[in-house]
Image 1 (cartoon, rainbow, N blue to C red):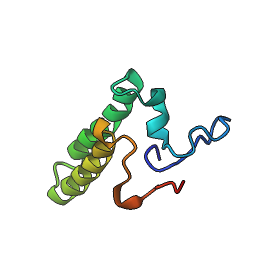
Image 2: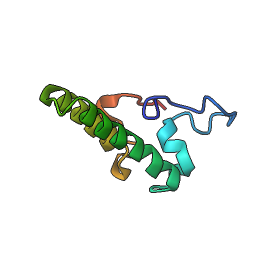
Image 3: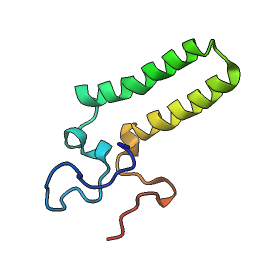
Length: 92
């Protein structure tokens, strides 16, 4: 949800953030803040828990690992305001 939703659905900003995703709006775009570190750690912890509770099943591990990579790559500082394949591109 953080990397997909554009604009500011929970506050009234008069269109200031229409071209940004929720992830890009967190802490005004500053990287490695406590909030962003927490929201990066959550998928990693969920991945480790799911791996453990599926008893290290290889197909399940592969699906979970690919999902984890997709989520973590989207959170990298170099991906700030980058739209892959034009997804969520704002026409201005």
